[in-house]
Image (cartoon, rainbow, N blue to C red):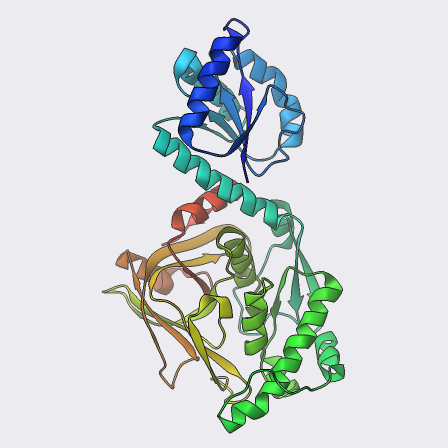
Length: 405
């Protein structure tokens, strides 16, 4: 998707010379862009809109445009400048004016490489923000009883992220499962108890798909432990498959974890691995994360096992590619977040933990103390790759939040 660029130009400057300088400067950046010049009619409708301050003497022009622009746009104002023709000085005056009015903004200026990199990050964040607006996320059953610190401010979620949360009664899912016929599973296992449980796990998957379609959901979190007693099976396989299909699917009715996964997917394309820290070495920054499901599009291979706590149903033991990872969590009131980069050293398969197990080395070992001193709940989201820079930009664009580590 191209960047949309609008211009501010003083009438005192030669139009032909300014046009030639514009073509040279924007061409040197190596970005895909659409130039709107001074036509601001559709400003604010794109994932990223830049205002290219081409010359000095444009401060008054911007001031006259501002009331209309504010009605069209709630994102920060990004002022691109080459520095020629007093454009940097004009940009500084404009930004100062914006800050006096409590309006966010930034001057994008520097080397071509810096400008290009900065625009790429902002474009990625803008596209992610656009994906979130109008998202519908289901809460199927209430959050699990043990999630006592995972309250969610639904008003803030709607206002600041553009996400609507919908409650779906657990009974509705159970009725849907009951009337979904059992079919032979398309996948099988050599382990007798897993082979026997797979048709039931497949039925849960199809029932959840029906709920997603009925409510037009982009994702959901499921009070999954209720399935253990109600249908003698798990949602682990269903969640692993649905996440791989692009439907963000979380465990245990954990809404903050679901929001973290939805935000992560909008940026990275994958929902992330919702997991509990199982052990932490604060001296080395080495940690183990574990859970019984992981999106199938995040792993190189996977195996079936039973669900860890109950020993029934179908759990997933996934093996993610070793290498760079990011650990992320956003609080339900959208006031705090945690981001840490690290490396997935290896996957393990110990019998006394949830089935998917990842041994991760934090890049900054000091961040391990966060988990023992000021954690945001127990579940955290593991993403392949290093995403701290873009995630922080995304959250800064949401509002000022407290970074925890």
